[in-house]
Length: 291
Image (cartoon, rainbow, N blue to C red; front, side, top):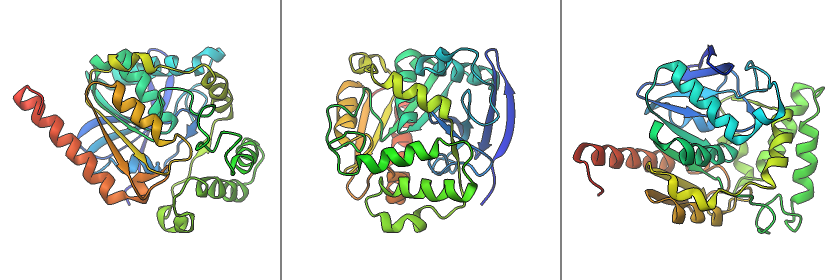
């Protein structure tokens, strides 16, 4: 498997570590608190056959600059950072794809900067806080796996973990979000690994308590593909349905055999649905009307 090209990109706001792979129209991929490296990312890898993918480490992640103030770790400030990256790369427009909290960033991006986006892909995301009112969410205290998930998250925040122990804990955490956890080693077989930015994670947990942009979904004016597993325990399906109902030009795809990772659990269908979405978008651009 071809590797990812690393670059330290100087922008008007900060220096960001980015990883590039693939050919085609530019696509921005990131996650709100993951730390990427040269091994790439399973979600981002799903798009490298169709796009030139730019996988971005945000502030306080990997080799990117630190935050000068805590507010710079917020979702809105992060979107301004992504805009600075786009401008520094010289693109007038690009697409955005995000999974989980990356999908939440994609919603905020679409609300504020649709004019600079070609499209957005939101996978297993939400437009508001998704824990308090959903017992299907593994972060809700009523969920049977709540305590186990919390223990794993706290353990992964420890800075002195050995690589082997971090991997062991990460595997157990991920298995909680698979429809068939016994397939973990088949699904995650490419040797891709990533870390977690504790600073970003801690800020996100606070910001999430007041996060709700559902009344602004109508301002997203670009084609939006929303995809979610039927059994998603992190951002349950009802939140994807809510986004699809609120975004004017959106399409919802439900994966009946997936939890939080449809791009792995039903990889072939995921690619097919994405390519169908691109083809429809391109036809509409060519003929200038909605199909």
